[in-house]
Image (cartoon, rainbow, N blue to C red; front, side):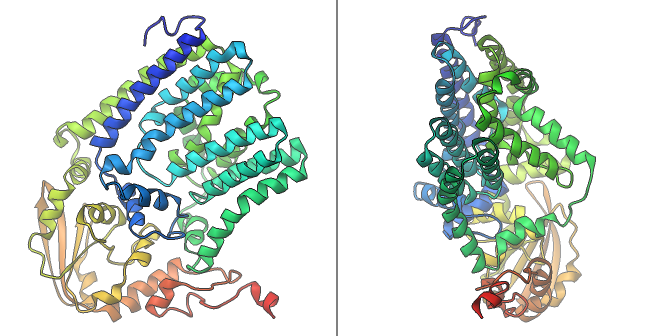
Length: 520
């Protein structure tokens, strides 16, 4: 980046040039990562959804499954699967520029281009090419914020309606969209004081919420249970998680951008919508962090708004410096990714080295794991992460054998253990203690061996003639007890898992819950 492009008082032409240089450089970095970085277990997990399009899935609403279903019709390679994510932050950077151009005086247009450049040059903006449920969430949240801010400025009820619709689409991506909805509601009630706009917002968003509610009512309330009950079994109060959240936000936004936004807060006046959609969700995350560790990807949908505020709060020459500082910050990230993708795995310590090999050479590992597998046998693992990755490369579902954890329950949707009765099953475990005696009750006979494949140690249990009834009465019943304790007030119109395995009573199928009194 030349000093000419980022002079002390950059012109609009210089600022635009800087923006386009950042677009080009980050596009190269994104394509490099998208093509060379091995498919991750989470990406493989979501890619499986594309093979079974539905109105929802065990742990999340359906949007990423729908996106990947479209992309899967092109090709299933990592570059194609990640193509929407590659474009995501670049498109949003253009949105940051477009919104700032509407909010700033015409003579300050340079700040609009530089605001987009600062956002796009952040490491989290260019290395975030990996497919998650956050991909459509971030996109629809950005659309919602863009539409809402302009609608409020113009007093447009239709604009607020569409902002609600985009928020609803974000909700069909991930439940964190609720935090944005709360920010909109509070702003309309406390600042705009407009019940008509509030009704327009609700009219736009609630139909999408009803889609999710209907899916859950006919599917064991599974992603409601996952997000609001099961995944919080380890929650506890602690200041460490608060400190982690604050440190993470400084990293995500960069310390210099945070300082500039807070220092220039006088410029927030007259932009209450932007202030609400940024600080209300971040404050709610701070509250949640009292009990839970906030994941980095949780907050990414709220990041673009911070850089619109940055464009309002600081000078063009200062933002030019921020682009340079972001470029310096990018260097260790580029080095780390280069080592992960291209360096010999032997540079890492043993356990991490095994993970690198497992991801980079999954096809070879899979070939070794199935080399002497009995004809017609089923390959399984003991954890969901390797199961997801093996499924992507194997071309068929690799189930998790055993009770698993709340994360492994996607099998309850895609796997039917009844069809495996009497079959041979191979259970593999990587870097995880495995007690072969714990599997003996579920087979007529079993054997255990250890193998080293591509330098990775595996424990392999081969079970002969799977006893489905025993598995159902012990393992699946334990899953019902732990993960399908649906609150009594919820009406359960259906629960495919319970119906499939004969747990209708335990899963309360047909119980109308709070609707009982209404239906009388």
